[in-house]
Image 1 (cartoon, rainbow, N blue to C red):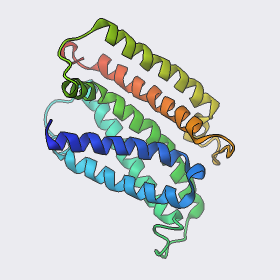
Image 2 (cartoon, one colour):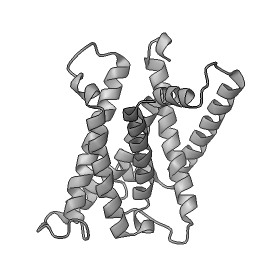
Image 3 (tube, rainbow, N blue to C red):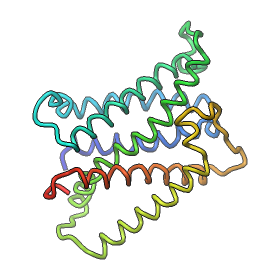
Length: 225
């Protein structure tokens, strides 16, 4: 495997871990949340640098339904990250506390929550849109050359079970109310184990990744599925 590919996979892995940690804002502490958020922004910059070839080709070629969807999702993920960083700097009490910024705190909190939850959903969909490519890389890493019906059934069943639980967790944790600002204050149960919180959010991530994956299969040409 090429060093650039390894670097891309490593960055995507740390972005996924960081995303889950950031969603546990009150449970990991304010200072940790800010430092992880700043690190995530740097990783996003690296992610875009490593994928500059894709970005530079945006004005070129034909736009299929899949490419249109991929471009829209990527653009909104980028916008959510920019919104998170701007609002995070305004709200910062640790990493960027030295900056003389204190205006629009109420607006910054609303923007931060909106970008956080939409960013979480869209990044999960983004991962799902690229899951086919990731599985291809993993097959090469573990030297799987031939397709296997039992393996395919197992992986798809596992994915669907995770998605089903993710749907339950999505409604149980009222994620929709945060996405559409029906509730502007996030509830955290401080008696809840972190493992339970992360399991639920990982399942929700799996739900939207699953949606992205199957939508991409529908939109891609038959030979690329």
